[in-house]
Image (cartoon, rainbow, N blue to C red; front, top):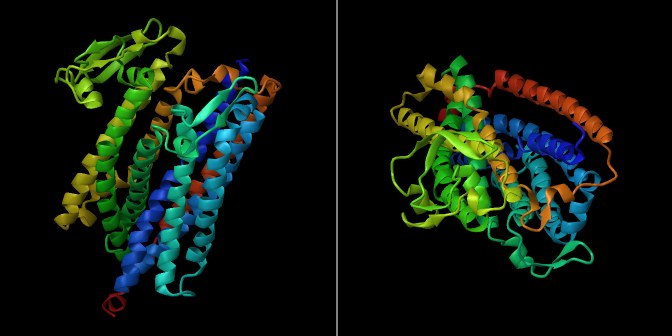
Length: 449
């Protein structure tokens, strides 16, 4: 393989894909801890206090790995994507600076207070510190999504063809471009699911070993409630609104993810199919038996016309197999999250969850699935935008650094893969070790007091 564009894309996919394992967990877990620590503060319940102390260690571990891997990702803009960096530099400077100044410093500073201030500062201030960590993580996600969403639906700029760059004309329009808010709310809800499943999965491993561990039970209760609500919101309204936005602003992506190869009114919704790239065909298609369901879902009208792939030039059609498979796997996992959380909530209400060993086993091994779903969502968004790196403005093939050789890219790919494999192994080792220790059981007299 000696295509520098493809190799640069693979390199960036490895680095950003690995980094993106951790922010959804950090964001979601921070908000779960806001609830756990809030209950501990207001009720002075030592069970919730111990649950907060235990999961704070896991938050710190996840946050540290996420920060370390995110730095490498930004350097690649200058090394492998020089033309792209020049083109978007005037636009991206503001949101990336805002992310560093208003979000990262807020998040990291108060994380230190949260981790080291327990029993050293007041209970209210300690809770406020984790609240600001969660706010900072959420704001950080917003500004990163602003930058990425501008690539999807550019706005608030003029094109300086002489300089070969986009120049900012309206900061407000660039920030609140058509895809920013739909993508932000959908990603935030998905992160809450990831944080909830992380909490539930860890608690389930502990409860399978010791069903009477009260801090694990407390964390499980909070995780199931947050997980059920967030899983529903991830599907609707946020996922539905995001899909409608894609239909309006990126119709070629919609056609690819939905497997719609011909423009038609009363467009059907496809549940399953086997994609053929050349020529574009869908084999063994299974349709949802409601005529015009896709038309209604994206335009609110069963008779609305939805553009298929035949409406676009062949060189503007995204990769079909990867886009279609990633999207449908994301939807399948999202549906599973709602189902398993509904079952867990019923068992929690019936007071049988903590002793249901089969369900605890399922919940424990479901821990990584929301992260897998976010990876599928990222692939859908980024691959579905191809062949554009900035939609309808700059092609990916024209955005790389012309002086970087394939040998240099191969070396960095091998190096990053080796380092990240070791880092992931270390993260999992630390996670398993902390989980095996678990939160300290709380004695009955402590709870009563």
